Length: 181
Image 1 (cartoon, helix red, strand yellow):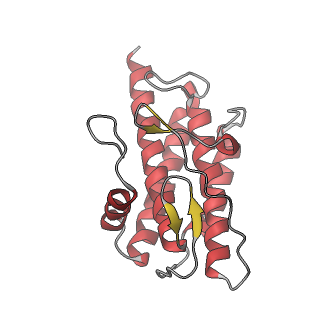
Image 2 (cartoon, rainbow, N blue to C red; image 1 turned 135 degrees about the horizontal axis):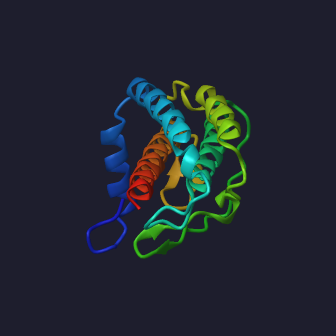
């Protein structure tokens, strides 16, 4: 999500795009199932190039997939917390960093890239129940996102669907480029 001039869109523009792409909780669940299935297919397809740095990217397919799953695991757990009645401790509101108009991964989500396709297939499958929960909009229960501000469970899950699709497509492009080399 960047403008043509590498200026990141505003939080409002980003939220409008996410809400248009995933308008209802039921639509989001359907689309998330499709993205997780598509990620499984990409993991299987990436096996021959698992440790090759993708052209135009800094990461291998192993790293790209692991990063996506780490984000999805955390988002799924956070969504469950936001949907519960448990107390929420807010993190410090430290904005995320951009470089060249692109979001930079927080340090806790930078992948080692040392997991096998089989291990990441299992982890991806385990995120399904976490990410395909019905989450109605609830602006009264939010948690800070470093690029988007305060988000409720529905918006966190929208972000997970978007980032899953984003990274899946990046791996697909990377695999195509690697195959052409």
